[in-house]
Each structure stands twice: as structure tokens, then as C-alpha cells.
Image (cartoon, rainbow, N blue to C red):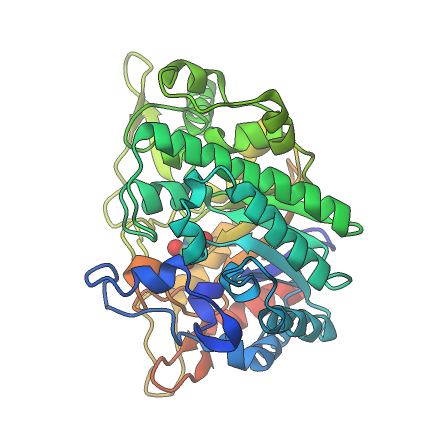
Length: 448
Ligand code: NOJ
């Protein structure tokens, strides 16, 4: 059982649910453009309708209220609220103002993500994260949003999963904008992204009374196969924060979180990238390293490790028959919610909120017109048991299930369903799945 004030919520993101991509002055963003390129999205779908939440937000709030969540995490679409001359678009802002008012009517606290991957296209054309002015544009956008939502929102998440922005968007390029960076540009862009975060924090603190701020990276914790082996635990911890100059460094944890929480990049970063370091000024590091309120983290899966005869860390295969979600990277490893928070707290020492965790399934509507998803129910229960366990050792403040709805799962399109609520994409009909009612019960009880 969690503490009385534990925050149960669920999460979504603008491009994944809103639709109405040309309405009320919204300008093009990188996903509007990317989805038009043939072959980029598995089922050729896009964000033009999806859950139609731009229109149906009042119904959505009712669904949230019936679920009993105290918190709803959603993101603001930059291209809806700022036009191509960098001026506020009031109609776009009104949507979020109305959404927040509607949520508050039901006592649901809005948790606002400022950047969930949908850069305005005109800014991408100006160089995106490689443009040294991007953090000033982001600061202006943050200023506009926080002023518009004054008195409605206190909780902000600056940036969602920087790893995916950089690794998927600029290395393997299966995400928008799909512009490949060389290593030097990658480090430069990561630094600019961290500056976006830092400048946004400054603006939020200035504009929002009693603000609570964080950013929401993702990670895939290393799970020791032998829970009693101290050396193995230490090596798993070290590996979790390790930086390697391999193809995947843009996916690392410490390259983003160390500057933000500890004030500088990890030591190894300076060594292994010494020939291509960006221009890192002391005042930039100070800006990036401002006090935050929480460690947010998106955690879905994990990888097992053991030690070989020479005490080297080795990756273990998943045991035969191990449960998997309907998406290639999602192996069901509940201990991810034990070890992930533990490592993070040990290094950064702030209360933790799981900003995303969820299960992807091939859900169908049964003959009884219901959606039976026992695998998701099992997933939620098993993961919350582990989160509950670690909450006895370190401060855990909340959990956001991803996602409220089935939605546009980026390059995978519409076929990958994570929702507690099924969306019939032909009719727009919403059907609460069995897992919705299970989560409702858990929330009512205050835990498992
Ligand atoms: C990570 C992202 O933040 C979200 O947009 C995505 O849909 C889920 N995890 C599932 O992949």
C-alpha cells in the first residue's frame, strides 16, 4: 500500500491523441511532416485524427474522473500555441486552458509536459536542436504557456525522453525529424537540449507560484540475477549510469541527468568525447543545473545481468517463455520498478515519480463488446508490487500509467495499443478495457 498522498495518474502526449492538426491556427510540426514520408510509419497512419481529443476533451476528462486518478499528464503542442512568427496563438492556448479547467472541475491535477517530441517545422528548418538559439525559442514558448496557464498548473515536465529525441530522431532516424547527426553535432544538440530545459526551469520558477518541476527521461535498468551479490549490484548500478562511445550513447542516462541533477557531465564523457566536445560554458552548466522537485522517469522494461568467472558483467537472455508485450522492446520485467528508482535515488537523491509505465497489447473488442486484457492487468499489478516494495526504502511520490488511451505509437502507427481505454479508430468510440476497471480498483484501495 502506498502513502495516502501517493499520486495515481495516467499520461498522454499531444501528437499521439489530439488530432485536428490543422485547426485553429496550428502550424506544421516535425511529425506532421515525417508521417507524410512513405515508409516511415508501419501502417501509414498519422496524427490527423487518432483519439480526436482536441474535440472530445470534455468526454476524456469524464473518463479520467470515473477512473479516479488524481493527476493527468499531457503535453502541449508547441506548434499549436506559437505561430510561425513566434507569436502566441490564442486559440491554441485556449484549448489547453479549457482542458485544465475541465480537469480541475474534477479535482484532477494537470501535469504539463512542454516538449513531447513535436518541434514546430519552421524551427526544425532553422536547425532544430543544432540552432544555438533553440533554447531562447523554448524559453519564449515556456513563458507564453506558463502565463496562459497561470493559476491552473503548478506541475511542469520540461522535456520527455531526451534519449528518444536524439537517438531515434537523429541517429537511427526512425522518428521525426529523421535528420542524422554526426557525433559532434549530436553532443552539440544534446547540450542545446539541456539548455532548453535549464532556461525553461528558470522561466517556470519566475512565472509559477509553488511550481513543481522535473524532466522525464527514460531508462532500461540493469537487473542483477542474484539479489544477494553486492558486487553484481554495484556493477549493475555502474553500468546503468555508464557512458560509452558506442552507437547508442545518445540513449544513456547520465549524459542528460548528471548535468541536470549534479551540475556537470560525467567524467568519462569528457574523456571519451574529448575530440568533439561542444562549447560547455560554466554559466551554461549552472543554468542546466537548477534545483528540481522530482526525478521523473519513464520505465517499461529492463535487462538481466550476471557476473562471469572473472567478475565481468554479462547480459543474460530472458528465460524461455518470458512474457512480452506486443512491441519488440517491451519484455515484462517488474523488477525494473524496483531497481530503476533505487539506482536513481542513490545518485540524484530526490523523490521519484514514474512518469510512464505501461503495457502494449494486441487488444480486440470481444463479442460481448468489451475489451479483455488480462496481460495488462497482470503487468500493472506486478509492476506496482515492485514500486510499492521500493517505496519502503526510498521516497516514491507517484505513478502515471501510459497511456489513458490507445494512441499513435510513433513509427509503429496505430496498431500498438497501450491504453486503459480502447479507441475504435473507425468510429472514435472509446471502450474502457478490463484494465481500466482494475486500475480504478487499485486507486480506490490506494495500492495493491
Ligand atoms: C515513451 C513515450 O514517451 C511515449 O510517447 C510512447 O508512446 C511510450 N513511451 C510507449 O512507447
